Image (cartoon, rainbow, N blue to C red; front, side, top):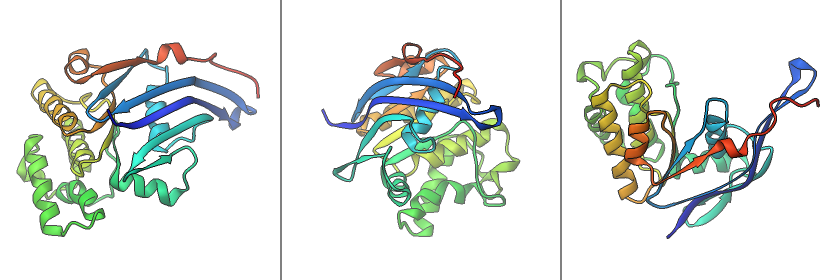
Length: 236
């Protein structure tokens, strides 16, 4: 069993500078590890820090304590200590992320939004667009929308573009933040199939799935963040 991602003693506290340095602890002492082919679901009530934990794993949030180590092209990288250029390279080749909301450059067509991760890996434009078209079709995004910017799309259409963008490069490690929240039953089933296929290829997945049916269908294990909660407010 190859461990692709692990965290030890992970903690996150926000400092509210606009409120005289008030400290807002979110979680502490989180230990986790995810092997190739596993899907670890993060559970717990709203406010337990599930999305914050994903952002720490991805490097969007700096961890307040602990380490985050992943296997990147045969060597271990501590994301909590890595310099920005290394973080960017890890994201390009190893660590994929599907956030709750699509954030893209305005006026870029959906086809090129989805193709972007492949282009960053050096794939030629025609091949990248061909692959992107396949992903958009698989996720039931109508072809008439492919040449339009996703900012004009419905919430569900935007989320499907977001999922295609996050999965197209086939990263060995994948973080999913409520990927099915805006989707109907048919498209939720498609995403379930895509996550299962990724795990079957050996991808290590960490995800938040508020839909219990989806979570039960894809998760190998669950990690309840309730047990890592810290007191809500502390003075600086």
